[in-house]
View (cartoon, protein in one colour):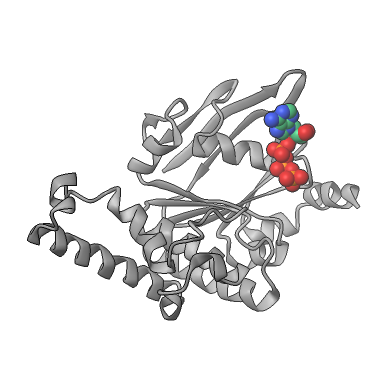
Length: 250
Ligand SMILES: Nc1ncnc2c1ncn2[C@@H]1O[C@H](COP(=O)(O)OP(=O)(O)OP(=O)(O)O)[C@@H](O)[C@H]1O
């Protein structure tokens, strides 16, 4: 469904990625891992449209999206979450999810300004829909709290709720477990599985090896800008080259 073909990325004299190719299976959870400096963030930024690769392409189905900006990729069903949570602090938790839905709303400015009946109906529909995603991620009880007051782990769940409200086909997550304690990480693993069961393809860049091995159906390992291995968690754990790359890091 999503594939990268022969991606090379250079920054001046540094080659961050060289000739990286792989495909991501529909309705699966795919993890991208690798030691520090392997090129994971660079690859994530290319897939999500922040960087245009020096060469190579990103395909969604048959469509070459390598040069599409992030917001256009969102229209095609690719939505991302950030490692540094980006929420509207002054708004409530519920409003944070509603904001994303308003951008998809059909209700125009005048209808909104004059509070026309169809606008109010639309507003209620958006509110109910946003609430549904707060329930899905387990934070409905916090709907009326200011987002700035949320504990870190709940903020991460809110960011996931907001991304899901856009009804992505592919959810790309940048280190979703970063900063979470072990209980929160366990809850996150259950949530990511639930997202897959809903028929959403999940791609994550993640340092937490336990989480990756637990939830991923497929793993791509990068090392020094190249693809070192690709396979099931078991195949990756048993791959001597992968083990050596990680040991070399210590
Ligand atoms: N904007 C940039 N300009 C110059 N060099 C860069 C840039 N971004 C990344 N690099 C270099 O590219 C290489 C890969 O970096 P990248 O951040 O993608 O690795 P990573 O696997 O995400 O690492 P980490 O696990 O430490 O976050 C590194 O050598 C890095 O210094």
